[in-house]
Image 1 (cartoon, rainbow, N blue to C red):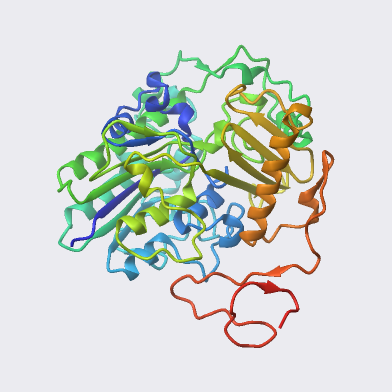
Image 2 (cartoon, helix red, strand yellow):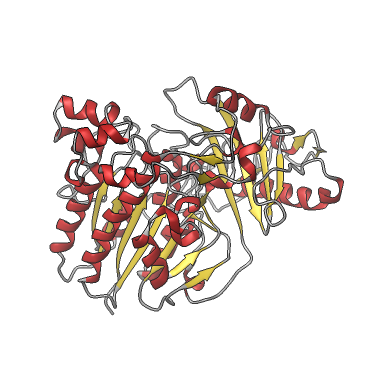
Length: 496
């Protein structure tokens, strides 16, 4: 039996709140919307972390950032962490990656060097793009195109953009298709800053006022202190309930047109053996809760991601309301390919959901630091979040905590952490989160996550369970510290 092919399309900074298929048709994303019409749209998909590198770590390794090593921007993956490319290349797939990577720990743009698991003939990270530009063009891209007028003055065409060249490299790969199964990742930087796009895309949004909703008027009372610090740094003017950002919205629409080029090429290939997946790494606050960008918060604007899958056996126009995470993606692709899913992978296949099943699941999200170089962006702000059903619990370790009922309060205005009627729900989520941190070997875990002002729990043993690194399908067995022999699994620390 032949193995299926996969095209994974990834954008940067594009949550559900700026995608037409998720209720915002005025934002002009017809190609992504067309994917949803032909596949399954996941209504409740979440990133593992609302910042670039950690989000990509979870997505491309199937392992949470805290274990993968890349738990802040510009930290590299651990050398013993296998990526999606390595796992599929090991299984005989042709693997190609075109676009932003942000997982080598070097800088935002990358080294230009193809990492293990991907075909270097098609590797095209930010350093490769920069190598094609003059110094003047680089400065123009990064600093000189910050208004619609400047886009017009410089007559920016698609061919100038990173997005267009990423697509070109991906299309060249597709033209080389042979009988060997393939995995192609097309990873766009857009609509991330500097929002580069042809002027007609941005001009279409010059008079557009994005409806932020009630969250535009959040005073941040009874919210964590670090959010108020973030809001003070943002120094936004009084809101009228809308956000105006023609460059971002224009670039959001432009990257959709580039995605359309990939989809058109995919449609010219055989469809009976190809899955196409679309998602993004994180979102943009767009002035909700008086915040901009992304960072140490778990609001829907930056964590709730589009996820669309189309392919053989997938019902067209279907949707799923099951909670899913980016770490679920790699196990799903491996299962679709008929390959083994290593115990070290921390996600759970969503294959049953592609056939219409719904499941009771929770998702966990994390945040530790925005970037390793920066002293700004709030510094070290460890967060852990769990969502089950309509309820979201956020532990902000160094400040105060949050509980929201997303069904009754989708704008996340009312922090219920001290609400007496919600005590049982809060404590049950807290227990589930603590169990998850222990079971997943979260290196930041400890008693301080248990003993919160609203709950003086004491569960963690100072000498607790030893849990060896799960098998990854390639590395030798983990050896027991006490005996030097291959470990036999979980045991109490000090137990022989």
